[in-house]
Image 1 (cartoon, rainbow, N blue to C red):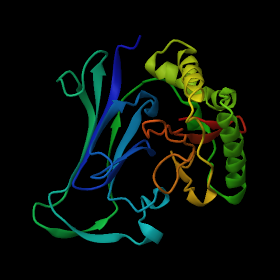
Image 2: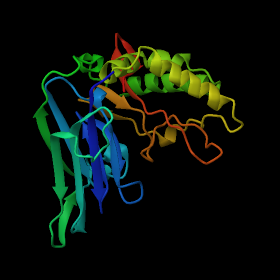
Image 3: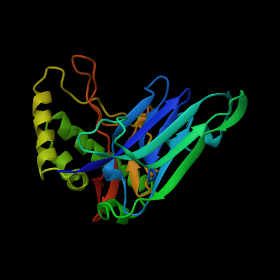
Image 4: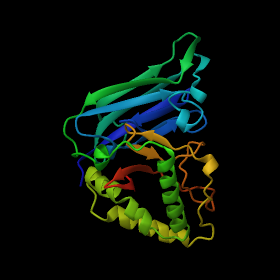
Length: 273
């Protein structure tokens, strides 16, 4: 059982902000999508130097988040807008904000107190050496992947196969592709080996028995694949900032998403986060 967790807390106040750990996008927050987020992120941290970053008022799609639309940055009037993020070590059983967290790193962007014109996206970050943590992750030694035509064709074939198997209610392919993510997650959160895998199987069995079950059709026109983690990963994300692989709405209009980051491990594309 883990004794503590590295918890990310972040918020966007009056603006939109996307939050990154070690060049891996974690979540986007804003007035229309929720202001605050917190959660353990141990499997996103590496031994030694780590970076926590905020992209304030990112471009309109994930692929344009850092550059703005068509590489044209946006000038706009702002005042009193704020985005902040911090990573704290919390003991198991603690509640975020209860005073038990030990802050490890933090970064903040604050608009001027008087209304003024700023250019966006703006990126602010902090770098902190957290010392030894969990050892080296497999993706850290993977090659630069990129999103060239050959890689995109390979990713498309993988998504087609994965989508078809999930549509049939089968999880073996998903679990096989996710084996490094699962084993590294067990290491980071000190889970019982196989526990997460069995949980995925149980949830899939329960959901596929429902009348609403099914996967949303793949639509390549909505894809917005983007590189991250020093271009060693590709995120399977759509232009609406949500994962490409998604289930149909359930009886309460909730939608299940399959958030996937691919890297090439031992010559094959694998889901690593």
